[in-house]
Amino acid sequence: MIDAPAAPLAEKKRKPKTPLQQLLAFFGSLELTVTLLTLSILLIFFGTLAQMDQGIWTVVKDYFRSWLVWVDFQIFFPRDRAVPGALPFPGGNTLGSLLLINLMVAHAQRFKLSKQKIGLSVIHAGLILLLVGEGLTGLYADESNMTIDEGGSANYSEDIRHPELAFVDSSDAKTDLVTVVPESQLRSGKRIQSPQLPVDIQVDAYYKNSVLEKDPSGAGFKAKQAPEISGTQSAEGGIDMPTALVTLFPKGSDKALGSYTTSVWLKSSNDIEVNGKKYALNLRFERSYKPYTFYLKDFRFDRYPGTEIPKNFESTVRIVDTEHKVDREVKIWMNHPLRYRGDTFYQASYKPDESGTVLQVVKNPSWLIPYISCILVTLGLLLQFGFSLSRSLKRRAKRSAT
Image 1 (cartoon, rainbow, N blue to C red):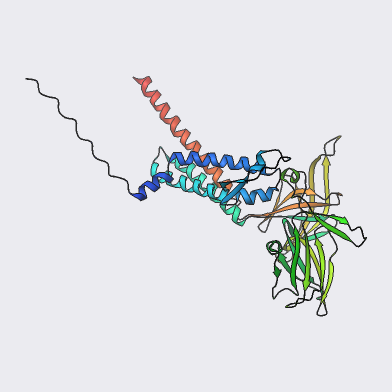
Image 2: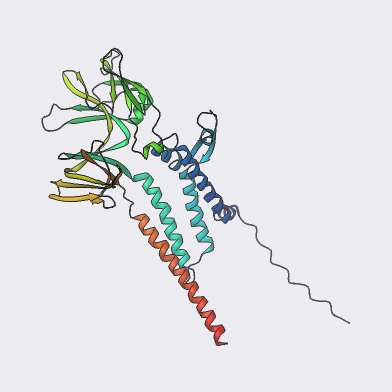
């Protein structure tokens, strides 16, 4: 009699996953990684197309530093053909946050600290640090320009992305008292009232970009709205030149003091008098004052032979910082920035008439994070490939020995 084969051991029943485990499995899945990377590539593509009509910084804000963006269908079609409608799409903040969560959950689920996988752990740490660094840069980094005439000086930089309406009280012989209204309030169109302002302000019109034309009557200039400088025009040095048309009222009154055209095009200010005190009113780019002064002693740049294309920019500046007792000369040229008191100065451009320099001023508390993350990723790759090579050589040596 032949014995029947033994029944196979019953497989252990797997316990059903809890809702929390299912959620963690989703956020740590490879499928989510691929989906997020694909959406990121599409977002970059949409943002690149949008720069045909919008400025670089507008695209950065709306596409890459936002949680949700509405992608206009118009960007996919010729501009002479109007196509209405828009597609909702996750912004850079959303995709970056989800990628960070996906990476951290996947690492916690799949990778255990061991000699063989220490390289992967270091690579993941570098990538996590890179995403965190980008988030901190978006939150805290600040960029502006410092324009200095040759032989002149400057103790402030200007953010050409944001204008401000400034009231300057110069009654004190030593110090000017400046009160500014930020762009966000100028865009609102509402009457602006504040205890710090000498008057109430009604914004009649605000143009993000404008042109000034001579009034046919011969009485000054007339402002007209202009399209925003696109990303392609920005690459050629174009910037938006805002204009604000405002009416001023005594505080708490509806009797107008007068209407004024303020524009970054205009170098002169509007002189107004309120309660016997004189103020200079003008629209200018947002200023950031420094506790030190730069003097431009010399500026020069070379051109490629036979062309008008600049080859090299170079500024010789004198730094005067009475607080830190600094008085010295430095050179700033292309790819050789100056770092001083938390600011980094890059040689960016020059004035159109070649009479001075334009330095880009960058303040980024997290500037070191990308370098550290790149070092970690490189170290992780070397460790991972090194251990793999070592194991391969040991297996080959064993086969040769047998």
